[in-house]
Image 1 (cartoon, helix red, strand yellow):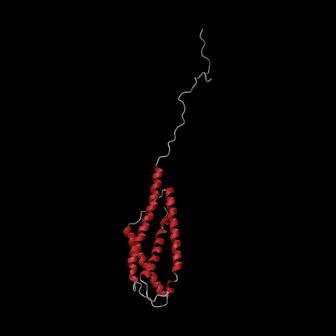
Image 2 (cartoon, helix red, strand yellow):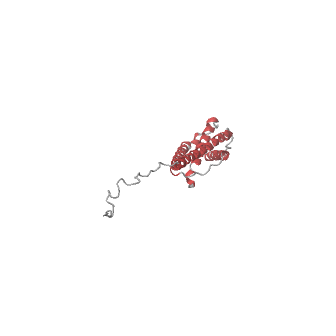
Image 3 (cartoon, one colour):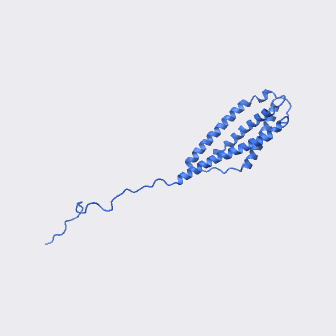
Length: 188
């Protein structure tokens, strides 16, 4: 299986989780003095995330349909703890980078992304990272279930073909069917 077949799900889920992390952080602990111009890009980013997520959902649907048809395997997923750790670390890094970039582009001094309620992003990243890891494992499980179903369907024997019935002997004798080479010998 080409590696590109299953590589859209992770980035799409991380992008969705990163946008959710940013929005939840400011919903739960609004920052003082934050201008709306700093977050004017959010609707455009949300549109991009929705499109990427739609692409990933379509890719997953195609992969499940293909797995049912050809029964090709998918690489074994990494463990839940490793996926959770990687997703959480990725979310924290994206959040910090996003906050630093926002403050740098605002024109003022660069502020600490974890100050003023920013530490709330860490537990949110843990929860969202777990959701990303669960979603990745679920998607892999759906594809593997389709593969198992295809293999089980292929292994099941089809209807048995029966030979056409033919009688063991012809109904009439050789003489009655005009297949005798000559007449019987005459007796005197």
